[in-house]
Length: 193
Image: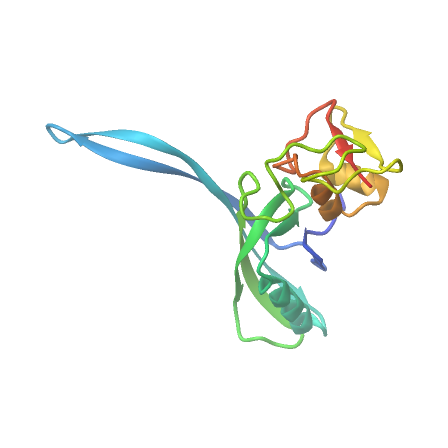
C-alpha cells in the first residue's frame, strides 16, 4: 500500500518518518489522607505529543533538513497531516539532528504538541461559523459563489480538501467553528471557497 507523504504547513516529507508515536497525558493530583493512603484526582487530559524520527538520504539530504528547520523556526502552529494518523493542528516543539550532518544523509527526530480546542492558533476559533452571505467575525464573508460540502459518514477534512482541490490549511481557515480538524459530523457544512 502506497501512503501519502507526511506534511506540516508547507513542508512535505520526501518519504515518511521511520518512527511515529503519540503520547497521551493526563494531569493527576495526589491528596494524602490519614494512615498513609492517598486519593487521586484527575485534573483532565492535556496535550497530545506526537514524536518521530527518520532519515533524509540523497545528495540534497542536508538541504532538505535545513528546509525542515526553517519551518521549525516559524512562530505559529500549523496543520500536521500524517498518512495514517489523524490530521491535527500542532506546534512544532522540537527538532533534533541525530548525528553529525552529512550532505547525503541526515538522521533526525521531531516532536509536535497538539493544539487543543484552537487555543493559540490564529486559524482556529471557538466562534460559530458565519452563515452564508453574512459579514462579521469568524470566516471571511461568504459571497454568492461560496462553495460548501455537506459531510457524510466516513468523510475526513483531509479527503474533502483533496476532493475539491483546496489546501487543507485553507479549509481550516474558512471553517473556524471546526475546532478539531479530526472531528467532523455527518450533516455538517464545510466551506470550501
